[in-house]
Image (cartoon, rainbow, N blue to C red; front, side, top):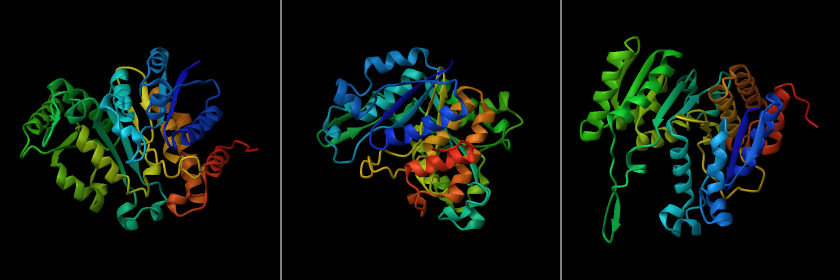
Length: 350
């Protein structure tokens, strides 16, 4: 029986994770679930945002379902030493799992164009996969300092790190439209020169059927919202990928619709990309769609159950049409939206 480790985390994380688990139990009743702490709540309980008991649970996990990590900007957690902050627990989790490629789909479902702030003709048919490098760059490089009035962080990449995430992007493109856009800032950054060189070399060596082009990150930031249909698969480094995928989240209508899968050497990590939203935590109004769709990605990429994943995604699309959540202009709360998904899957709701 496949073992799923759930890490509800902070803020609205427990609420949306519970919704995702409820859907998973219905579509895949053979799964077993084991819950553990991470982030700020883990620090409160164990003095560590990524405690040893959580690390140990990952050893035999088939997949990991994560909620959200972190608190409000004025949270006392933010005054802790950096290794004890909730976000450090998340970075340590990604590293422990060897998840070097974060896949973030940006998709406007047919009939849901009205949820997008873009004009319907721009939003219609958008289907982008952003592949973000997840274990390198400024987030992980230890050559960093904050000393009085001077601070610096270092963006560093090796050919190995570039090639492994680019290979994931090319693999994904082979199953889609066969187009990859590699995003960098090679006109001013040496690390981007390396990035561009290595992505191109890998394509020329092993993926000649893929159409590859290179674009600067500032240009992509404009075009991804003004001409989003030009993109199929986007691959980029950690910082650029974080920013661009949050920007692209506006296209479907809300961060609450953005799932992700982090893949690499071991069990995959599946999580919504939205934050912990502490202002609405505990009110039962959080949009669980991204967490539920992350569960679908868990089935597809973590357990190779594409049929079950498709069933969930169709049900979420139907629920969004009939029962949109409050962040999308509707009235559904967390529970009623989850029930709408279950009903769309054909599951009776008591």
